[in-house]
Image 1 (cartoon, rainbow, N blue to C red):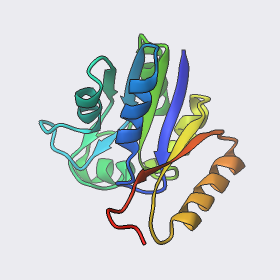
Image 2 (image 1 turned 90 degrees about the vertical axis):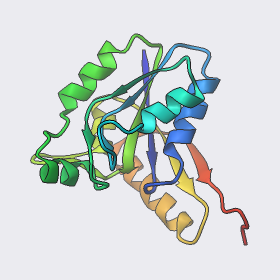
Image 3 (image 1 turned 180 degrees about the horizontal axis):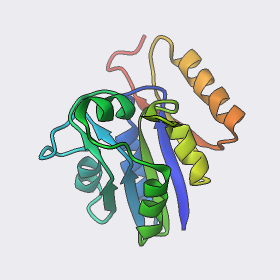
Image 4 (image 1 turned 180 degrees about the vertical axis):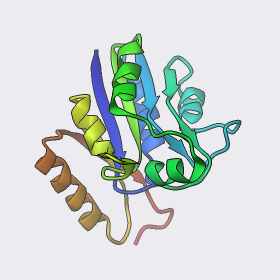
Length: 173
């Protein structure tokens, strides 16, 4: 089984659509794993539901959900719902009956999933020994945000498996 992460330079850059596109193009059995979904009530469709709508044959897994639209660590603290642990993420990966597990982050690479101890999506990628696709949006600041994220990945030893502009303005300058 292979594991690949999908991270972004920010929130709303198109990680979920890129995750769905990779899943749709993969000829193997794919599971999409979302360690933490934020900003939605428990009964509302989330990112994994959107992937499932776009790619019906893919399996999906969401480990924890927090109602407030915050970084997972902050959302967990405010909601009283426990944070997801690296062990739970690895267990989810191991439980997946798939050739490829796509693990979609929340926000960007260094968004915290836990404060004590500090745990970021980068840490989860390292724990899973997974390369990652970096998704960015076209616009002012994109070059800097992308370069900073690529540098952070490189310094941590996370292989960049690809770079995708996931959101494009309707009328680019």
